[in-house]
Amino acid sequence: MADSTVPKPPPSHGFTGPGSGMDIARPDLARKKLRRRIILGSVGLVLIAGITVFLMRLEPAAPRMSSEPWMDSVVRGEMRREVRGNGVFVPELIRLVQAESPGTVVRIAVQAGAAVEADTVILELANPELQQSAFDSEWAARAAEAQLDKLRVSVESDRLQQESTLASLRSDARQARLEARANEVLARDGLVPAIEQERTKAKAQDLEARVSIEERRLAFAGESAKSQLAVQTAEVEKLRAMRDLRRQQVQNLVIRAGISGVLTQVGDREVLQGGQRVAANSTLAKVVVPTKLKAEIKIAETQARDVALGQKVAVDIYGVMAYSVSRRVQEIGIRIALGARLDDILMLVLRQGMGLTLAGLLIGLAGGLAVARLLSGLLFEIQPNDPPTFGAVTVLLALVALFACWWPARRAARVDPMVALRAE
Image (cartoon, rainbow, N blue to C red):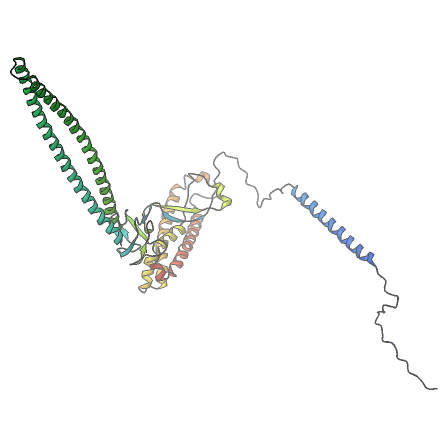
């Protein structure tokens, strides 16, 4: 009997076929997991809400003292609170020179940075249309004036003619009255017919009526002449005002400073160039008075409530030096363009700032030593003439001033000559 080989089934690796009967569906496990997650999430949310409410109801913790308390008596008075902020110096008086009429720049007399007076010419504009309009207004005013003179002569001539006619009628009326009276006397004696008497009488009455009409006509002509002269005079005054306006506009094409100060800007956003067209009411230049300055300080919104009207302001040396450097940007640019080294510019600004600092320190030391005895009752564990205190404060102020001078000096040493020469 021959041996037959029966193939063995492959290993199952722990899995059974679908027909083995060992796969059991457990849908309740998924529902239990979902229910557990919902319960845990709800409990977590409730705990977070409870902790939040608990923390919100907690009273602030008492402040801790970093050192031993200093016992003293309470004194009624002002509580000083300092509010600090960055700012810049700006002139109080600034004049923006604007163009009253459009025009083209033909000449720029002075550049930014120059000292100017009220009548200093900054630049000149050209406007052919405006000049032609001024020329036309001039001749229109002259024509109206000539027309007014002609009307006056015509009115006077008409008045004289009417007066002459009235005088002639009055003479004829007088002669007619005399003739009528003579015929009346002769008619009573029978020397003149009655019809002749009536004729001369009617003639005298007619001439008297014409005299009355001419008198009223002369009076009306006088009123009419006044009205005509008033209309023409108003026209002349209107044309004269237009002529004066055009003259002023042409004169204003020569732009002047208007006040004594320093020209800080020629142009609005860009520097004006020759041949450039400018519109009406555009800014041509800005003139400031550098002797009257004010500080514009920016205070944080959280500290704005501590600022009040009339509050005293102290400006530190950094603000003074920063403003001084900004005022000398063009000068520094010219020095660099002429070959000045960066070290020279740095020493120039430092020398100026430290000179002011040294003067302030000397004045402060002298004043401090002078009033030290008067303040001896307010000092605590410090002698009025304590050399270490005076020395430490002097060195600290000198170092602060040195840094305050060094930072603007560093900025000045990095000035680009082209940018500096175009600076406003």
